[in-house]
Image (cartoon, rainbow, N blue to C red; front, side):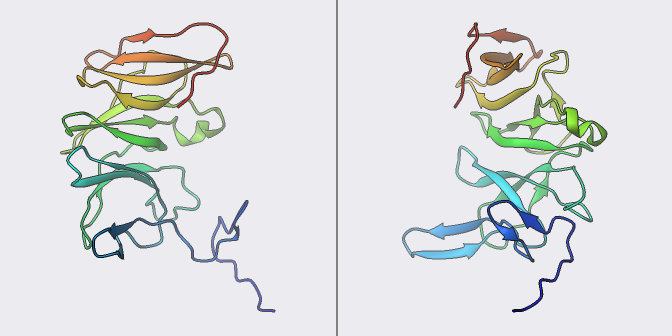
Length: 195
């Protein structure tokens, strides 16, 4: 048998075994032509793709630091859904940005989860944040909330975002107002709301 060469910090993954140089990338499939072409490439992994309402862009999460296996600094990117396009970084927070980016109904903003700073990784508390697709600083909407959130989904009018709010092993459905971050719990009790 051939020797296994390990030259990455994250060299093995449960369920996949040794990773080698494999990375997770996006591909475009042309249904009419039945043709598949790579959209992203390189030594980075991409995850959580999300199509813009007009079908022109894809938002995603990627860790693109000098050593992506060692850093905990994933960010939100967008790329035009055309072969040869280059990703554009939208967020610059020094910790992880996570979850599936959610497009606002008008396609001008993305909601995502901003994690805690890297040194607090073991105690991560995801907060709801939004960023303009054209660029600019991300804005955390749930900074005053001392609970983690997940699963961002915009309301049809774009004025609020629905999230799952974690509280003492229960998960409630909550609405976060975009204008000021006001949180309204929509369910109560010892239950777990998902999907």
